View 1 (cartoon, rainbow, N blue to C red):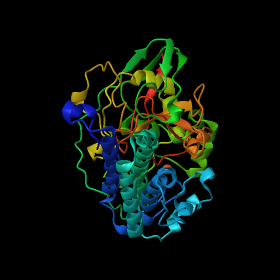
View 2 (view 1 turned 135 degrees about the horizontal axis):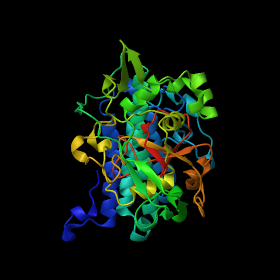
View 3 (view 1 turned 120 degrees about the vertical axis):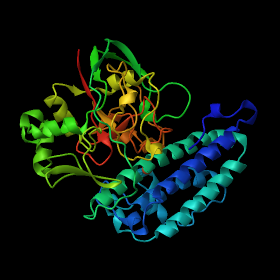
View 4 (view 1 turned 90 degrees about the horizontal axis):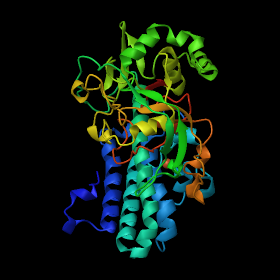
Length: 435
Ligand SMILES: [Fe+2]
């Protein structure tokens, strides 16, 4: 991944142009690196409407650069495949008509090889544009190119989560990779960290990239609250299951209870009860559930019901962000290569953790906050304004990134969002409560 500017001695620091080119190529290369373990057949499958085939992600991220940067800015640029915009536009109404999302898995042509050729053509055109444009153009294009880079990182996470779902549908439990995990003897005790009441400031401020939904920075009054020092583990979640958690309507929101009834959920996604023991599908194939690892692949409804069972609640996104402010941005990200949440290691904690652990990486943490605009929020004009704002309805905010997120992609102010019944992302639980 891209180096930090501090890693270069002053006399050899790359120019803004070199840095942008390096970031662009690093991210484009990493997408293809994530696909190296795949067989050609894996690229094409769409296992449910929310999942996109790997080859669609590879093409769509290229289409993004083509549509928003190359076509408006590279003189005489003509797409080698003008019909691709119909296939690879995701949800941009202002760009034009597009193919049905749920039917992406039916598109066997263009082939995977043809999509790689398309990708490399886009890479070459982007390289030439960024290398040859004048400084004023570079300055004007940099925010858009950076958005494209971050957009591709979001799709890298989806490549991982979507292929996990695809492989989980195969009764042979094929493994994407073989990653040896180090078990831990026990989970550190959960303790509660207190935060005082007061007016907090949340939202992005400063230099660097952020999505429009992270701003404007603004004030929010918070009552005093407590946050759990670590994530909820599989073992703790199993206690909820064994206590009849999925059978007690008093623990569930009404929509959650009807979802449990209609889907017949009785455990997190990917869990299977085999030979008297709970197993789960991972990207390393079927494994016995590690009771010390963070619980993962639970919906908002399950996170909320678990919290109620545990005499606690989910944090608001403001509470989460205040707790995250000032913490080091480190954790189990995609760069670790594990691609699954890891147990909290004993050496990383003191008996009474003074700061919350596992805030970044491992699993996206459901908050109780509806995904809404911050005060004063205005989406960008034009098609780019469709990126975030139009999804501010019927979704909940998740914070902190996961084991499929890049460390260069996450921030304390980062707002992810999914509908309350979604489970296929790496989603987990941290508890909060009143003081
Ligand atoms: Fe996209």
